[in-house]
Amino acid sequence: MSRLIVAVDGPSGSGKSSVCRAAAKTVGAAYLDTGAMYRAATWYCLDQDVDLDDEDAVALAVESLPLCISTDPDHQVITVGETDVTAEIREARISEKVSEVATNRRARSLLIAAQRQLIDDAGFVVAEGRDITSVVAPDAQVRVLLTASAEARLRRRGLQMGGTQSEQDLKVQVLERDKKDSAASNFTEAADGVAVLDSSDLTLEETVEALVGRIQGAA
Ligand code: C5P
Image 1 (spheres, rainbow, N blue to C red):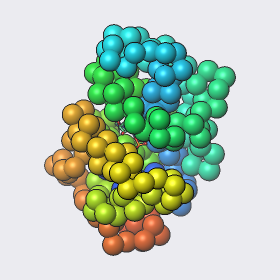
Image 2 (image 1 turned 90 degrees about the horizontal axis):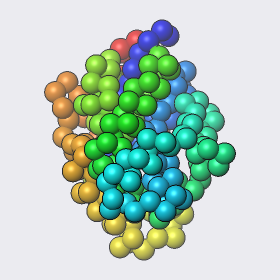
Image 3 (image 1 turned 90 degrees about the vertical axis):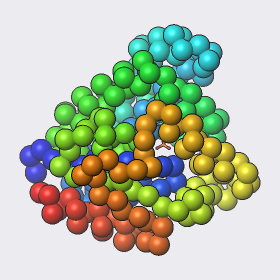
């Protein structure tokens, strides 16, 4: 496959990461998790004791963020400087703060530029996030909004966290985060030309199959 860009957006708990990684593996594409980049930026700001209310300080920190993210769907490794943050960026302390970094305009435009470069370098790639279909790669050949009901999203995130979180904590991590994130991008409505894939009543395998079908149809 020469160049083909698959852009997938969706709210938290919609299953984007699992679906996109599996679809990328199936079709032999690279995989870009843009949420991991915002998470790594947040990890870095916290590590550097940056005041997240200070917009300039956050933007300056992201400007010097020594981020390295792999786009191999079989080997997801994210490092900041010498530190492997792959696991740590999934912790609740990051999920609770990430929107503060993601809604910083300068930080956002720096990360969007980095995402465009990674997509360009990869050539054949499944990229997922909140604004890929609309801002990062609006010219992608395949553009999908992956949705799921709030119940399904809360259930999935609960399972992902190993069943250790209270319902209230899950609501904060899923629904409250979506509310904050919607200040930076519109990922609840499909932009023109974006196909909606509702996974509420689909298994992971069925959702992957639906996405792979669209990719193969465009190839
Ligand atoms: O996808 P995930 O839940 O890991 O994303 C983490 C956070 O990164 C989101 O809550 C949002 O604040 C931010 N994000 C974003 N734009 C993207 C991807 C993620 O603002 N394209």
